Length: 367
Image (cartoon, rainbow, N blue to C red; front, side, top):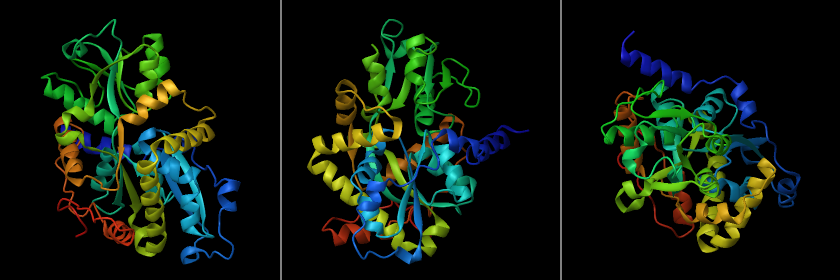
């Protein structure tokens, strides 16, 4: 079997993880009673839909969704159509849920979105909006690693094979001239694919020497004595790169554009409030994290994590194209055709209606 065929099969597997993964990621989380209470009297269902199923991660890089849920913004815009939620640890399992129809729309990183789009031949999803930039760091044990060159030969955790941080770390390692097998993670540096929830414990036990991870996991490691060796934002022009997009099933977009527009309006409202009142927004995001996980983040983790993320409706499409090239360099993707991956029509309609400027798709819009 050729290396190209092996890569393609791996990506296909990433996009079709077993349904058991959904249970581990919290699939099936329902709308809260207080969400339903926020439905305006006399509100009607959108397109006669009983519910819209929304996916997101329990990461601060998904704070647009966290805040939107906590404040009841999605439910308000959806009227009598119930907002239901599913929680995930990393992108490949969310793509599987989207492919199976278990969710309709979701917040996700760029690499899984690219993988999902390309492995389906451009037929399963569209990116319909942006959400966040930044919030990713390489945190290491300062007793073992004191400089970037010291990373060679060490064990570095990433959340999941083929997820956005996994691709970013493999690309960075390749830029150092180090060789790493993208599938096994073995090479000049060992890549240990580990659930975000487990990485802090793995770090404390010495099982890993550091991690390339999103917030708040990065700040959790710092609270355990880790040191930020590299902020990924410093590797990008203007320190801007997409970390979270909004994706939707193409069939759902075609059949229920009003529902997608309602979710996008709630997303724009959420980001507007986040940027206007970051302290209250930070508290709201933390409240939702506590509701989802049973434990709020302490201020020593929450504050530095929050300060490293920028919330934006712009999907920063040019950086997604670059991140796809990184996946190719890392050996996880053959050169993709990303034309048509974006459909920003509804987002730009919402932005104009709210007095904002339309955003671009870097030539990768709907065919």
